Length: 555
Image 1 (spheres, rainbow, N blue to C red):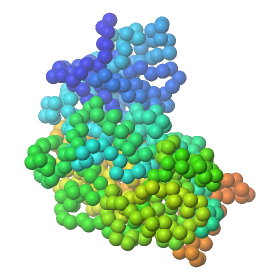
Image 2: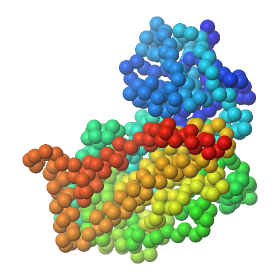
Image 3: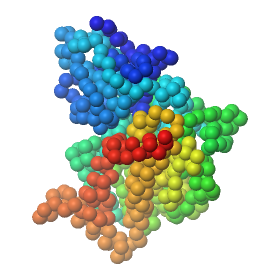
Image 4: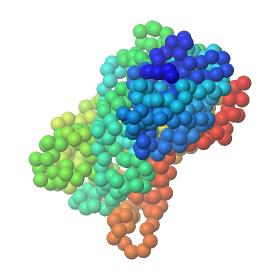
């Protein structure tokens, strides 16, 4: 029996295919694909390790078979008999999507195959595409590229903003892509979301997070420093691509497509995905004209407070010992505070815009900030006095775009470049990651360059309704958090208080769903729509119903 060993590196004889986080190696001949056995998985634990080019990725799922059926058209699965010295190990291989799905074990000597290999009829790899080693779809924080390069305008990997919130809808994706352990180590799981009255600190709203988020939605809620998220995503993508920093895009020819960098270098590609943020240069190219941001009337001070400094004050130490997401709501202003690392607390202070820059790096005035929030409760004053420096960021908004894909069908937008999110629902990064997940599912089905345009339009079709609804949800919280003292504020507080008592089991009668509650995190129906959503599963369901027509339109 042949010992398949480690997965071979890509060559002209061995094609390595990666879509999303699926990676593997196949030996192809016309009409057949020969698949060596592989994929270690521990008995009793849903999950698989995907091995390619010396890297192992862990994917956890209830069962491997369930995941295979969700990701593609499940064809066949065979288990390996575990070696006597490793009785806990089993292996699996399968085909899906008619192409390029295979994994080989990191240490095949652990296994004693029942059969040497199985051969299934399968479509030959299309020669019309670029070399198969380049047929990849990557998730990254700046740009998703159909080839193996990612161009970023910054000169080094760094965090321009402090916070990154991973709610259940994106946590499940990151875990599936093999970085769940790193996310758990880097992130903080707040126990609850608490709303306070600004002037006296009275708790007027409360929603459980922590274990309850897992129980209700299947995955956890994390607060993570954005720099840590960047590093996790970069480390996940780097083995499969070349990341070029300080490569600013000066212009684009969407028909080719090609990018001209600030150095004059011209880069050609099959597809360009622009994930260049709310101030996207490529958005105007896609929509065919100027698209200016709309001032929201708000700006946001952002700051980091060291945990060690907060722990010195008895009142602030309570927050350190009881990590939760805290919001103080006041007239035209509100504050959010939560832990993002064991050593750091993030503070965001929304305030009326008085000419702040539309920039993530503009310094703010500490004295002015403290003056603006001087009527907030004493604990807030102590907290603000610990802030060493602040950034002041003007909050801009845009209406949902009429289209995300250029008319030539080779350039598309992703994330804030097409659906910028105000920070009042903590879904901006989540929507961008969901976008990337859908692209990964759809482009796993590609067999010819002519299908790129139809696949991009399919991506826009499935993502547009969800992102637009999330945009509007975030926008509504801006008003809710900033009521002037008076009837609207009283009604808001009473609504939040009623939901808090119900969620804490302090009211009689059946549990209500709190639909339409002023506290969106207490609205059970809204939370199910937002946090139970599985972008990959929804994309695959859509594809099973519509994929044939999409590919036929390109024929």
